[in-house]
Image (cartoon, rainbow, N blue to C red; front, side, top):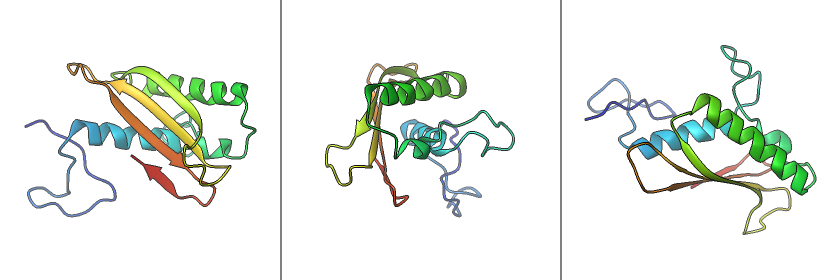
Length: 133
């Protein structure tokens, strides 16, 4: 059985000190969510880590802004999650139109040794609620 990291928030596990992820896609989903939501400078051990997606919430919904966000996401994934093969990054408003300031991020990726692609979706809202799929 491969070894996975602890689930967040931390909780006591049945067989180990902490409850662990039991699926690599769940673990990668956590890594992607953490990378997107962490603002540069927030991680004291590496001030360059993070996209800081919340700071884009009230930017104008322009192609140039969406392109800038996608570029930042791509460069952060390349640097901090280099084992992911990203085929597409989509940034824009949500399909549900819950709020005009809700930001939707979709990352389509594959991991080495797996031919199937996985879709990671994250919706960020101004009230600090996060939709993670």
